[in-house]
Amino acid sequence: MAPTHVLRCCQRGLAWIPVIFIALVVCWSYYAYVVELCIFTITSIGEQIVYLIFFHLSFIMFVWSYWKTIFTKPANPSKEFCLPKAEKERYEKEERPESQQEILWRAATSLPLYTRTGAGAIRYCDRCQVIKPDRCHHCSACDMCVLKMDHHCPWVNNCVGFSNYKFFILFLAYSLLYCLFIAATVLQYFIKFWTLCRRKSAENCPKNELPDTHAKFHVLFLFFVAAMFCISILSLFSYHLWLVGKNRSTIEAFRAPVFRTGSDKNGFSLGFRKNIAQVFGDQKKYWLLPVFTSQGDGLTFPTRLVNVDAEQATVTLHPEPNKSSAEVPVSPLSESQNRLLSNEQHANNTGDHLANNTLKSAESETITISVESES
Image (cartoon, rainbow, N blue to C red; front, side, top):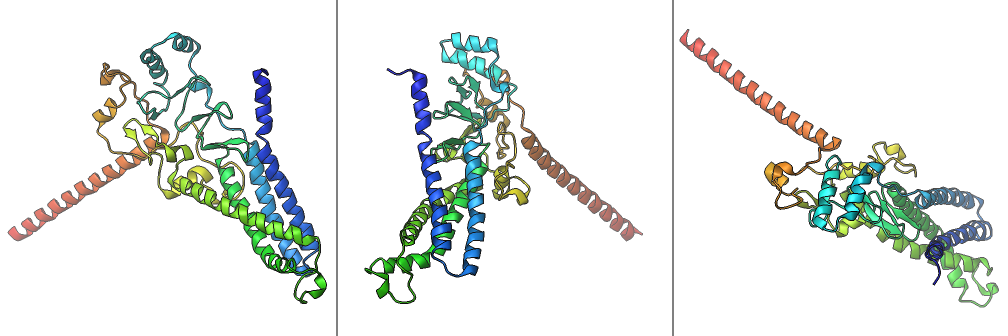
């Protein structure tokens, strides 16, 4: 048998085949559109200029976002989520899952963790030997834990996660725009060449049809390829736009995250506008550019506030049934949650203050009326 590292290198080499295929198709489409269509087929200079300007704009944005999606390294958990050396040795020596969970619960006391496994345990990766942050998952293809992992995409040979999810969305958007522009501008020439292909020679063609040249094959295949990719990308792009609006990853769409109070598919949803800002940022002028503007650090995420009884929430945190609620470590609220809570408390205090002022003013008016009536 070949060594493991040799097989691993072969696997990594083969993983680039889809990317090379896409690159070859894009290079051919550039040649077919610019040379065969705009230079050899279109006779109007004004039409050539307009087509070439908009084509190159969509082409540059498509290639830029595709490049960023491929070569942006996936974000990994920080060192604070790794077990200390002594705790790691104890964890590896322990054979009972209950004892291992005790070690993990002690280590996770100071970490901002709000999600659990389906059984309510701490999420730990034995492969990477780290406590998984919220929304973090291990990618078997990349062999690493990826922050806010969405999926591993073979067409970019990279894991789509917190560091490049915006780039992936823009890649889908600009590739769809690229294919739509090509299909729309090539359609009239596709119809003319399709009619021409059914005749034996260009001499018998009507005057409004194009001469029989080798460019017709490029134009015909260009329309077919653009239309085919347009249909496939449209469905994928629509699905990911829905995920962004719900603030979910592909993994969370199929398996709802488990919080302290149970599974909740909308646990990270903050409302449509805030969900969009989580991926694209607050400054709208950067939304359409493949530059990183996503909010947060990928380790902690604001969660939707759910009104739950405090004792009930504490009970759900029990790592073991024989432990009391006082012994169970409770992680502090994240900064975003504290801000939301403080806003809610401020609103409640403001409401109580206004109600008290209203009652006082009503009492004073009653006293004034009674005094006037007596006088």
